[in-house]
Amino acid sequence: MSYKFTLIIAIIGIFTIPALAPNAFGHGLGGDQAEPLTFGDMEVTVRTDLTPSDITVGEVDDVNMKIRFFDTLTDITLDKVTYRIEIWQSGELLARNLFYDDDGVLNVQIKPKEGCNEIDLWKCTIYGGSEHASAPGALYVLGEGRPTITGPIFVQGGLYNIRIDIEGATSPRTVLATLLSYDTFVSIAQEQDFLIQTANAEEIPVVVKTYYDEVENFQFDSSDNSIYFDMPFDWSPDYVDLVQVVHEEVRVPKDFAPYAEGKQFKGYVNGVEIDQRALLNDPYSFEDTNIVHFLITNKELKKINDSLGSENQDSDIMKLKLVPLSEVSKTSTEFFLVDT
Image (cartoon, rainbow, N blue to C red):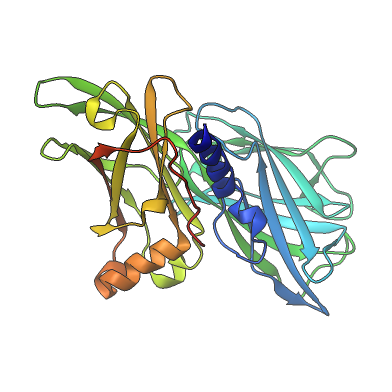
């Protein structure tokens, strides 16, 4: 019971890292805050939040995207804001349009829609709302309604870049001489199914739930019962600075002995053993499935980069390896979050 309680607290802690660290700008899960820019005597920024905050591809058909423009010194929201919003994934533009909001807190309804056959995916995206009379081209909905974006957005897992330009503020007719441009990032989870082929010709189903990018090159090594997979990742120091946490889940049936309930594990990233606290074993969420979380924080990513040097910093692949150990953990095991 003690371990189960600390496990729940640990998972909640990881998912609330962005909220508990408002000055740590960078990638979030369902929310992110950009670094502030100077605007007069203010330090202004934008924050992007998705509701629901933990989204898995195929499980939701309606996502609220809230964007707030505010002064970080006073926490006062600026009103009468014209936003230019772009949504990107893996270098592809998915949506781009102007929006206007009277109180500075913009809510947009996003409706994921699969089946786009256009080479340029943004051509499949359609928008709902009325043009604001005093902010030409900007979509606006009076009252409790929301403008809408319907298209190939959040139909694949991975990291999405929400780019936001502030084109006007404090008045619908005020256009900024210099745009205030921000990048925020949100992660959408995707479950990928794989099969382990054992030495006895058994096929064991494995699910990898990725919150960062599509998993590739999934392998199983029967010599040590390890699971191995790759994922695209930019190891350049400037990019790593932005990443708060990389979260991957590996789900294996408990009746597969090497991954049975109570097992302990070692984890490796690009051949470097990660801190034991960056692995979280969850035998409680599913009765018949063991879940092992990779929770690789910014501190751990930098440690790996420092350990491997320039060759790793020029790499665009993250190689993850999970190795079960022979001993069984005690029920009183404690868990401590790795510092970010």
